[in-house]
Length: 131
Image 1: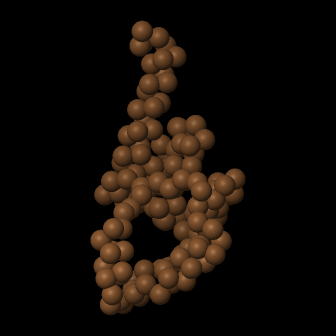
Image 2: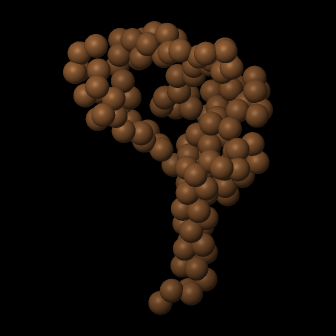
């Protein structure tokens, strides 16, 4: 193994939420191919790949959840999508669903907290609490 592999591993970062622009179709195909080759000793993980972008996000999250309503990542990402659209109460409900499935999901807790804070700030502004 060359140093390129270790450089890639050492420089890897995670993003709690992704934003546009996404990878090109060619890059996406290559990513899915690589992910499909990732080891899963004991075959414990059911592999599912959902490509969600642009206006098609909402129906695809619903479709993923129809397939597996206990898919916490789909609830979390649907919540983020709804929050981006300004549908904060609906987003909080999705974060609650994700947390009911995976109570240790730090990203879902953080997103729920931020979205709740935004709701509270809007309510306070509406009622003149901040002057």
